[in-house]
Image (cartoon, rainbow, N blue to C red; front, side, top):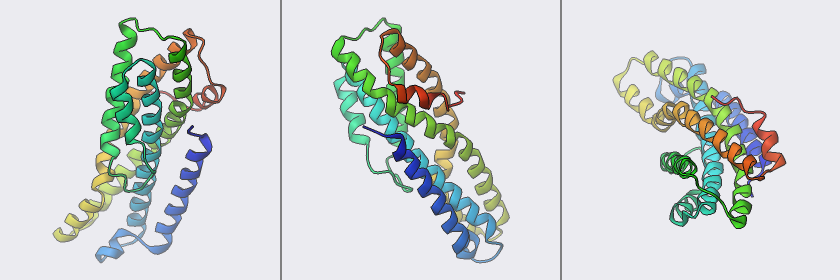
Length: 222
């Protein structure tokens, strides 16, 4: 079972990584020329964003795997379960996970709108999804703030470089972060809307998790 402390561990790791970037210099130094401060900030923010989203999507993949299992969508459940891996600042499955999570959120919304119901076993499985879902929402809330900070820092960094070859290199350096950062607001909005349906449905079916409920109180749903 996913624990809130696991996310906190990765948040701590993110801050340590940020300090390391600040200590050892920025992207401009690596490419040659300019001040190192903004480059270090950009790289640190990218690390924070990717690592945070890696943890968040793992939590959501776990949650939606259980939700799909509870509503008898075995194939989708297995696909999501297989996407859960080790959190990484170079998570190559990040885009695939985000797409799968978004699709699963739509599946649940459709199933609920069509009057879907759970048997007793389904309720037990659904209850297990609430904690990782809430942990994912907490992490997404943090990343929704980090994403625009990174995008601005990275854009400013690119604009400040005059050498065309250096621009190509820095754009490659920021490729995953830029793609992820642009996708975060839309995904957070979708999951925020879906979270209301998930927890309202759980309450209506007498399914609950005290830790999940506590976590959700710390999330500002868009």
